[in-house]
Image (cartoon, rainbow, N blue to C red; front, top):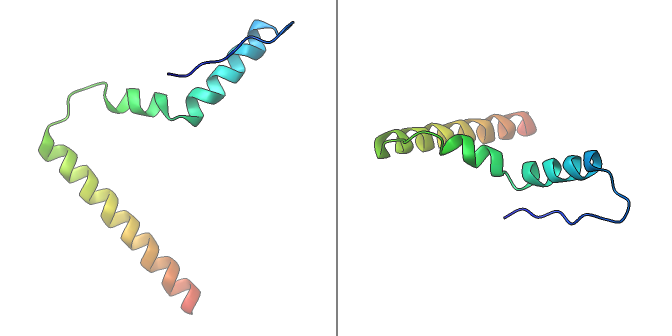
Length: 68
């Protein structure tokens, strides 16, 4: 749960701005977007496998750049 305490004399706009920063920092909105629709377990596995492959390719590319 994200909480923002109102400070003395603080405007609503600055309070809302602080709240939005906290929500984005906690990755709440990305989690909400991800859970918006049901995802089959096979699709979840496929997505995670693709992310793992992208990450390993990125790592190997960085290692090749560093060694060259």
